[in-house]
Figure 1 (cartoon, rainbow, N blue to C red):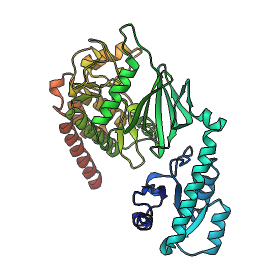
Figure 2 (spheres, helix red, strand yellow; figure 1 turned 90 degrees about the vertical axis):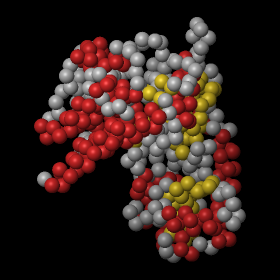
Figure 3 (cartoon, rainbow, N blue to C red; figure 1 turned 45 degrees about the vertical axis):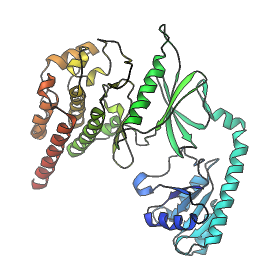
Length: 418
């Protein structure tokens, strides 16, 4: 038995597990607190669950509006509506809105509850079996030219020159994921460069388990295409957050989290090499997660997927040594972090020019632009992160993280005293 619980109170999960474990000792209950994580994404159908337990909420017309919206999604799992009190009118409204059944949280009838869930799961599995052989289901497994079983295509997220990104639902993971899909091709040496990058990205995410690193679920090949299933970020990336406006305190907090992630990466012998706002994603709980390790360098891997002396990455965020194809160490990632922090604080990049090579030249030769006067207290921090020579920067991501956190505390103290 696998259930999704849409409820804020963690005590309810404990109560439900008490009832359910009597019949299903290995029951899986995934919690989705809506005030913390927001509503269930519109593409989500909960197909990997036997049922969804939805708690009534005073924030949303007693939860009836949410229930009605979920049941309007074609193929959504059965919904058991949980009332906080015995209310005949609300019970009737819930059934009219499409609830599979209704229970009262404080007075659960054990036998009725288990029978209700068993019936819901049985009916859902029957409906899924019928759906899987339908033309709609067959089409939903298509991701460009590849057919990928066990994933349902929700929408195309982005199309690049090499890869396509899709939002998809994974029954196995019980959540929405992002599928990165690309043709698998071998070059004249017989090496599949695309799959090598995918393999490296998967290896790194599997090796480094950290709250600020993206979660990767699966690496696979289907119809001569390689694919990666990874965590889906409903709030988007740091670029979107920056466009909405970000305070100096928030910018420093984000920078500290990125430095924390870099500490974990660098401790595992990994350089990211492509830090930029588009590779910093936002979770619903406010935490960031680094993504895209296709250009990362891992000292433990046997292959290097870039040519010696090759310039790779994004010019606006490259360290001077990276832009000139020189050897890199952890301090190069810290420089890229400094560029992002400057941009978060000022809403502009420090170096702008008409072409990429001119930007690369400026990273090496143009002094760090000064911050606006109200942010002058943060200039020493930026100067250390954006020093032209690696030896003049912070020696490690951990040192940079502690300096950023200290700067944030000083900034907050100054604001409180103003």
